[in-house]
Image 1: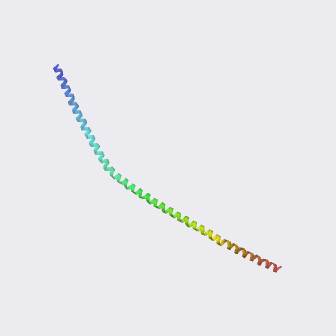
Image 2: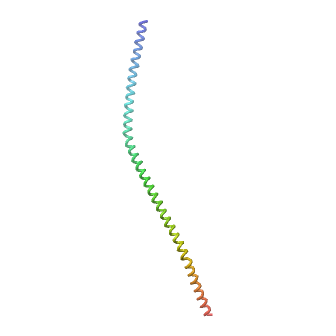
Image 3: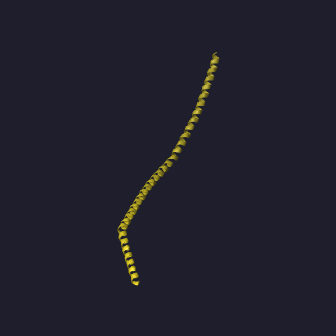
Length: 128
């Protein structure tokens, strides 16, 4: 029985040794994988920094452009309001001129027309 236990111990120790060698190989591969992962992350970080810098630059440009557009829109609004005020002033001036000039002109035209009719009638009576 001692011989059997001795054989079992040798088999068990051999199995543990094989398991340890297998674990060393697996851990070595895992370390290589982690090294490769670290390298890839470093490369990704190195390539991402310029992209983020460009993205920040583009974002700043877009922000400036939108601010300029807002300024231009405000100028256009002010210009349109100015044109509207000028148009309103012209229309108001036209109304005032029309109110002040129209009646005297029509009265003058009526008077001239009456005088012409009177002269025509006078000439017609003289000829008859």
